[in-house]
Length: 637
Image (cartoon, rainbow, N blue to C red; front, side):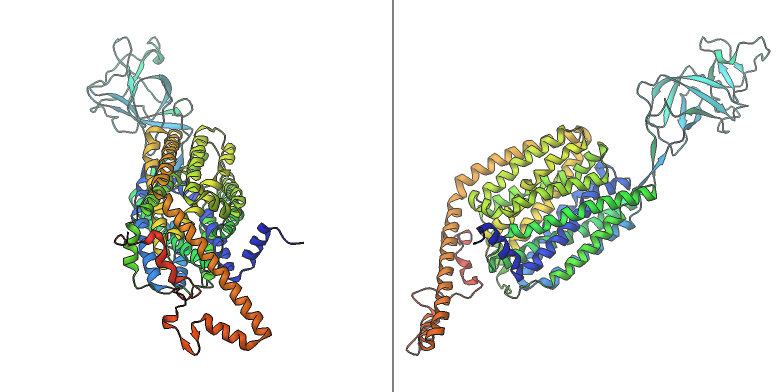
């Protein structure tokens, strides 16, 4: 019984030896990305980096990602077989991640004590304040009106004046608990108090038993001339009922942290952006050479994410519980090990057919002049911004809802697992819908995801929306990568892949992180997600209209050309099979037939090996590259 066509297609792909290194690399490298990058934002948060500081740091990413991949792509096209260069950059990317562990904390989270200590501040004709002793900072309870203060070390500082304005009296404040009325909150460390007086001198009063009780008087701190000024008189109050926070942040060396984080982040982004785009170029070149399906290869990248991401989240939770603090070391070491293994697998790629190009810059100029390519890259910029917002701030939102790191790892696994069935049929979907319509479909699902995240209140409800990642990431990126292959030639495939990777994963992703960081502060994370949903909707509609109006004709021409090339390949295969059969039956006839096909007739070779005006095929299809309608010269048009 013959196998179904789809099973036969998967089996053929699985048993093609040229594709095996691609599968292994995607499993390791994609898994490495997901074991670390979703946790980088909350790792930065654990170092005391604020939302705005993080968005500023991420704003530098586009600079590296914009120029890095295109330059390395051009270099790769110039080199030809660039697997050694790609292997070295992959290993360097793994090493760069370990440098994150050397970055000192900018701010340290310190628990507040159960009792808060205030210094008494009072000057002549000045405000009467209670100031928290550093490094404590207090988020004072909203509408705080009054709280009790117990005075310590205040035997010489007990000056009172009644609220009604009667004569002051002097008494021993040591151990006395007095109700304090708050006039206003100045900041997170200072309270201005109502009813306290600041006498210019100490006034002796009657301390006889018949004198009014101290409880009927308001406390007053000493004047600048008072002998207890700065002498250690403090007020102590219980934290509960005064401060709403349980922790305070203590500054260590913010500039050193931000500078170190920026340097490591830029190095990591450079290696990631360049290796990702170069590998996509290598994979697509190999797949075109052997008529492979890129979507089937990406299945193994999804498997890497599914298997490895929960392991990373679980290890982080285990090590954090054991140490009593957030410990992200397992993710960094796992990332390094996976990258190192991937760099070894890259050495087994078969790129011998990829010949060096001597016209790289001319081909690159032809790329940036094409309206269809420019429009595609602009859309990928917006797609990258959406990806950047979710990649940077989704875990931030989940953490605010109380999600554990293991749940965060599960969300990634759910999204990538949902992408596997889509990737198995991605080739047929893209062939049926077209590259552009498939990308538009991805934007439509971005709208649903952004709105969904903005509405949930339980972190577990993020899982259904994570499943839609199969359309916004798995299918959309497959369509984008194969679209670049459709728009390029063998000589320019790495260059165009580099431009796509730099704009989407570099500039777009960094732009999303930057805008998200600045919008979340004033608007909140939920409103920011809703604004991104509107951006996706507008892009979805605009790209559909522009593509149908201007680029549809070129796409149909390329589709017709590919169909004609496949027919020619089938004829060649049939001719080769016939030659084999004739060789078995009559070797002399076969030799004569082969000589005729190669342009030899009666001992004479036709000029330039041309038969009936068609160029001789050479296996890697490099002679066909000039016939791609996307690369017609403007003068010929």
